[in-house]
Image 1 (spheres, rainbow, N blue to C red):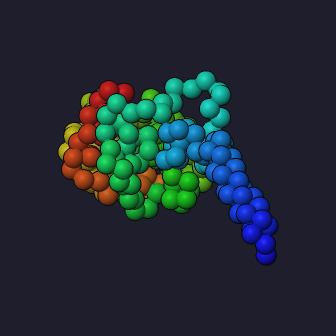
Image 2 (cartoon, protein in one colour):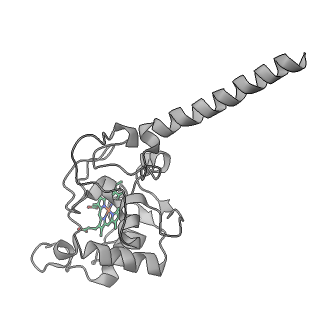
Length: 181
Ligand code: HEC
């Protein structure tokens, strides 16, 4: 190979790599803030979410709790691991917002499950009259629901609700965020 052909090959190679990256960056998948794979309820694949459609979904987070709610990552960039939960969560990412929605009120059926995610706004969880099957939630029992998947009477929640392996700090921040919904 002459030096000139080598240089041509080299340049073509570089430009392919660069254009590959640029294409990738224009992909929906890599929209800013979507690298974590959040999506709205009912969407199994983040790329099905169309950012041009008006929506309340946000891409910048003002607290650790909000970031976890949307992305399943905490502010240090650690992904919170889960036990159980829907298989697509592992593959495509997602977090509370994927099932309980931007307003926390749930109500939208999720892929591959027939259990409708409930309202998890703090107000609904702790209200006296909303739950007949178990006592109202407290901060302590909300933590148990999130980490161990049990309601306040100790009943197992459906296993479409993931069991989140969350630190004390993260779970506290998340509950603070639920109070704002
Ligand atoms: C894959 C869907 C999915 C994701 C993701 C998810 N949940 Fe759930 N969650 C559910 C479903 C479904 C239930 C209802 C389970 C049942 O009724 O047995 C539930 C129940 C709950 C409950 C108990 C509510 C009640 O009324 O008893 C809490 C609290 C909760 N989720 C919080 C969260 C938080 C916080 C996150 C994010 C860290 C989260 N969930 C992520 C699907 C999901």
